[in-house]
Structures are given as structure tokens and as C-alpha cells.
Amino acid sequence: MKFLHTSDWHLGRQFHNVSLLSDQQAVLEQIISYVIANPVDALVVAGDIYDRSVPPTTAIELLDQFIARVCGELKLPVIMIPGNHDGAQRLGFAAKQMKSSGLHIIANFDDMQTPVVIESDVGPVAFYGMPYNDPELVRHYTQQPAKDHDQAHQLLVDLICQQFQPQQKNVLLSHCFVDGAIESESERPLSIGGSDRVSHEHFMKFDYVALGHLHQPQKKGEEYIRYSGSLMKYSFSEQHQAKGMTLVELGENGFVSATHIPLTAPHQMRIIEGELLDLIEQGKTDPNSHDYILARLTDKHAILDPMEKLRKVYPNVLHLEKPGMLIGVDQQMGKARLARGELDMFKDFFLEAKQEALTTDQESAISDIITQLTRQQEA
Image 1 (cartoon, rainbow, N blue to C red):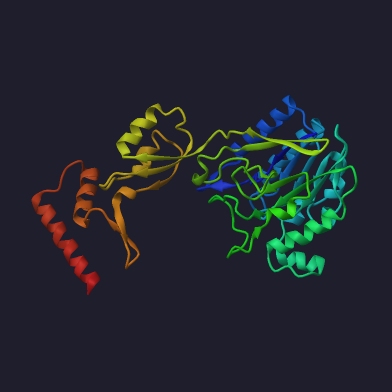
Image 2 (spheres, rainbow, N blue to C red):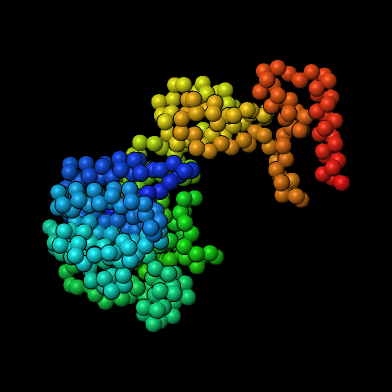
């Protein structure tokens, strides 16, 4: 029995006001191509299908096209749960009617206790979906105390385990933060103060646990308790992460293997660093100059319109940092200090703008103005 585990699609996401929808479409096409070339028994999506609870129309259309091809044309069952970015009720609209088409959306606690059972060469495999939840919702549903996410997950897992049937393999989809796992900058915190952490020990009765929420592919506690990672890179902190999906194989005795299947977006998230002129020369021959770029300039002098200059060779520079302009942090005031004085900075700016240096008289006049302004601020 083989199935694909993926999560955190975040369809409709924008990054520095740039829509990532075309990149997401390209990656979803790679999933379809893989399924055509390598038939599997199911595709599971462990939450955060959309980037927000009320997704843009274009994101809904993209998901609709994907499901039409996978469930409609390829006849591959798709099982998904809402994550913390999704609106569970909206995502689960008409879920009961869509089951017959092969789309299984497990969006509430009642449906969570009725598995999607898929017959396979190793016997029936039961897929249980645990929608993203918070302790308050679990307390209300179970009428039992749950002070944090860990206790809430324990209660829900206990409910699911009561439904286990002999001879069935059991797979769980869950969207949560397993304690000790590695997080990224692009993930929205589930709570503050560490109360969102969940122990992996709750999941050990399952044959495989398909986790969502954390964007880096990783396992936690056991080989069969895994995050597939996000569909693509969603922050510059993820530039070195290998994005993809997980091919899971179950055998007669349960878990056999989990294999990372790479997925590559048309635009990667990259950080480049150096002096402006060096980066411009580098960009002229960079084969991936169309990537989404964060540029860190190490120049210590003022530069006029560095973003415009960089975009001539790196058209998708989305963010600019200038660490070279700072020499440290004032520990008492908590403020970064400029590496050069105000007069030197103005001289840099004037030279950049006018292509000629300040005359002696001009420099003297500017120096007097800066001195007067400094005295006024200190008064």
C-alpha cells in the first residue's frame, strides 16, 4: 500500500505583496505528473490547504481544478483536513456529498471518528483525520478538561483509537506542533508560551502519522511520525529546505518506509549578500536571476535607489537589508548605530545623485546645518 503525504499548501498566499499562485499551480502540476507516472492508493493533505479562512477566488479555482483532475480523471482518493489557516466549516462545505467522487474532507470531530477505509494489497487501511483544534473546542466537545493542546490531542486520539478494527492498518492526519520539532519563520504560531506543543507519544498506536503545520520535512519520535513540509518555500528562512512530499509505504506489519519526493517551484527563495556592484555583476550571469531575492548589501556608503539598480539583473528582489550601514547595537538605548556620520552619509548621497563631490563651501554649509539640527534634538 502506497500513498502520498503532503501538507501546508497555503493556496492564495502572497509574499511581500507578490502572489505565489502561479508557482503553487506549477508545483501542483508536478504532483499530478508524479501520480500519473507512479500510481499510488491515496493522496493525503494534512491541513492549511488555503492561506486564510476566506481564500481568494483564484485559490478556490486552483484547488477545484486540481481535485477535478486527481479525483475525477485519475480516480485517486484525496483525504484532507483543515489546518489553523483554513476555515474548517467553509472547507468542509458539502463534504458528505463529495465523498462519492473520491474527495474526503474531515472537518469536524464527528467525522473524525469515522475513518476513510481504502482496500489495498495489504488489507484495509483506515485513514483518520483530526481537524486542527484548540483546547477550548475540545473541552466543549468532549466535556472533559483540556488545559493545553497536548491534553486536547490526547483526548481526541483516545476517541479515535476506540474506533480501531482488527486487521486494519491505521493512519492519522493531524495539524499540530509536535514538541521538539523544527519551526520556520513562515508558520503562524498556534499559541503563546509553549502551550501549543504536543507530545509525539500520543501517536504511537498508529501505523503512520501524517503531520501538517511545520514547513520543514522531518520526523519526530518515530520514523512513522512525520511532517511532509510545505508545498514550497514561504520565507527566506526556508531557502535551504528541500521541499516536496512524502511517499509512504505500508506492509503486512504496518509501516515500511517514507521517501521524500522533491517538488520544485519556478521561483526559489534566496538570500544574496555582498556589495551592490558585485551583486549586479553576479546577476548578469546568474542562471536563476528570476528567483525571489532578499539582498543584503555590505556597502558602508549611502546608495541612491539600490533596489532599482538590483532589479535590472534580479527582477524579483523583494526585500533589501543594509547591514553594512550599521556597526552594532547600543546596549543601553537598544538602537542600531550608523557606521558613518551624518555628514559622510550626505556626501555619499550627493555624489550618488549628482555624480560630483561637494565643494568645500557646500560641505561647510551642510556641516553647520547638521550641527544646528543635532543641538535642537538634544535641547
